Image (cartoon, rainbow, N blue to C red; front, side, top):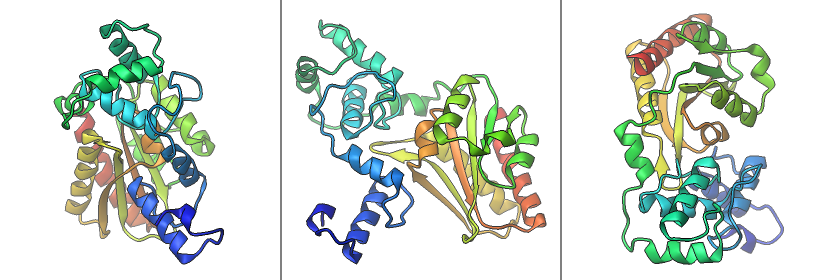
Length: 285
């Protein structure tokens, strides 16, 4: 049932609808309309053609942007990951499409450009060029450190155990956007985000997944870490899930978000050792 049909009372049914939306968008399922959920609700209201789309700061975001990414990717133009964010890669792909169609090459989705895009869009589903690129392994050789970030007692020790581990306690108060900007500026090969949740049990590993795309490299890294932890006899329940949390959406490189409960010193030591070994093997094998 749509949320807007439930009246002006936040009832149990409204909460269930919020949870269903969060589940569909790869967000934490809380039933609470926090800022992240509210932003995604606003983004869900945009349909392709409702507005001009172009590169601007801050980047435009919405379901219309995601549909544009899918359509271009199906036609062989690489807009990057399908994440609903109009960034430089989408600007370049749209401009290239316009150039191929003999249109004004301005990187703006005008009505004329949209008409051409709809005319050429395939009637059946096709493999996205972004998925094909990810599967083939293009873009895996960028130099740079592995950025470690987040409110977890594991962060500092983990970073020190990684070749070129990049950690700074001063970044603990940074926003996701600031962290992503830093990772981009240093050409990070990967990002490891850590969070301690006092009321949680087990270990939750998340990689990017939303709209019609997911990070194969992120899934492989999450699975590698999960396997390493299980082999090391760390007494923790392990879950691996694709999600669209802000840290996974804002970082374009391979990113792993790890959430864990309160650990004993021994558990922390065992867990850090297993995670660091899996990360080293994954990025530096």
